[in-house]
Length: 452
Image 1 (cartoon, rainbow, N blue to C red):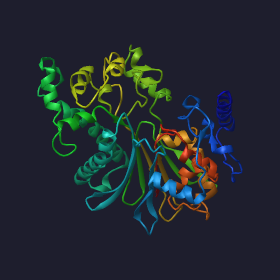
Image 2: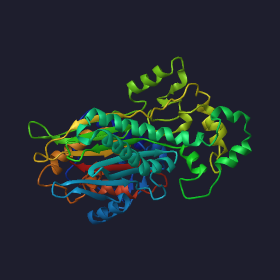
Image 3: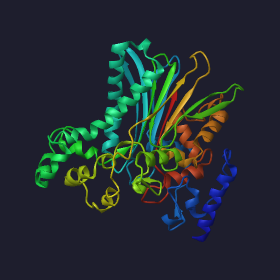
Image 4: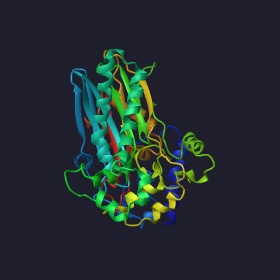
């Protein structure tokens, strides 16, 4: 155990020492006695000495077996937008633990805006459950489409400035989030204030109607309020001249292109909305003056990591919304004590914001160099030890930006995943894919690589 802890510390020290650059080995010559892996063999921060006993067994795979296993676990997809111009999106959702279902979701869609085709891609990292992230994956693109259609109908697409599209994207996301709680409050004519006179049994009768198709019942509407998801959405106009990226949470968007010297460079377009971002912490404290409990140990109300997201009504509504409505859901909360620990700090909601950061970039002409957009959940950043931009830049410079191309992986999202979990080392990849462990040893990881 002591050896594992020391080696884990050495791994972190090496990452810090190398700083902005880490170049993986081109060959893997290491040998593992008895096919044993230690916690420091697994990339990321999710797996540590406390997950012992170590070492654990893993199954060495051949290169052919790795390709099949990655395809089985990540289910890579390719969506074509324009084959002549090479516009497409490669995507995947990866979680190797067989006993755990990923809470990540992604979307790749065309949006028909009065006969013109826009493209929308997005990555969503759900938490506490999958109801809200699944609802967001399905319905948010529809809301964005409808907002765009209304604006184009009123103004015409040629007259929409980049700033106006940014505002449309921001408003559509906020409107979508507002509807989650408001759809539940509409079930009670007097609103939340009227519930003080309503017995619990009447509330249960209203919200526990488990009939009708999914999403139509009062129960389904209320359940969306219990969970949450980050949201990272990218929008591209019909002529591929403009890119907009809207972000809530800690997913990342990275734009990859050639710089003036002809080398590939990667630009991070997003900020993380969590406790590691001092600006976010300051914003929440500024919005709730005198409330020392608004941020505790880098978490909102001491309970949740993302400072901006969709859903999570207990952090956006007064405590009585949770106590009178959500506590009466069945099935729902089995133990309310963890919720009470942060509800006592809930004095002036909302504490979590649904106001997305929106970034606009002009894209190069289709006749010039290809530009790539990488969207990923925080699982990829964890696998990269916080150096996602640098790892992407290295991969494009070494392989994907040259005639060497995909390195045997036509799907660029799958190629990126393979690179960060082990590159050309079959043993490293085998440990990530086959570790003998019942709980997840890496975070859920969703990746979209969009060719623009």
